[in-house]
Length: 211
Image (cartoon, rainbow, N blue to C red; front, side):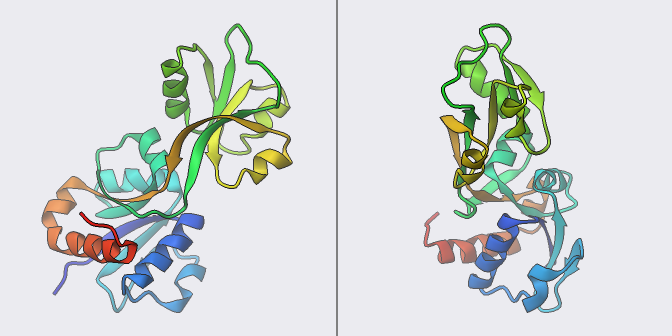
């Protein structure tokens, strides 16, 4: 009998696309799976247990071993730098990290301010550009920052760019293209290698990618 794997999944767009991918890989997920309000879901017909959380928390759960594997955006992986194995690019929820701001504006010459919910990524990017900036961490509505004079630029995830356009902002630079990844706890990977490598193989087959 297969060991039950605990999977940390982010709510939202990644969750919906990951569920579709798992179904294509012949995992028997119930029809009401996407509509549940439960935070922990145990499947009857699959040796899987799901923990649903905020995207930023998935690598934390996997690193600390409360989840054996998880699905996390590359943006979260870069920001959090957790001790986990990155097993597979799932090629879902494609977007990119970008620098944006009001059109036709220069950054302040003295202590320019950058607002982001990705302070580590933002800090590293501007350091690599040779620019000294002040990072302001925000948790939501990042687009507000340049509009109200809180920051010269923002660093945020961009998908279609519609939110930026609707708020009168433009992109100034692309930092990194982002997709979601399958990750594993190093100890869990050793203990449940057969089950985890089976999942990777099934997902690879769906994605039509080779090892």
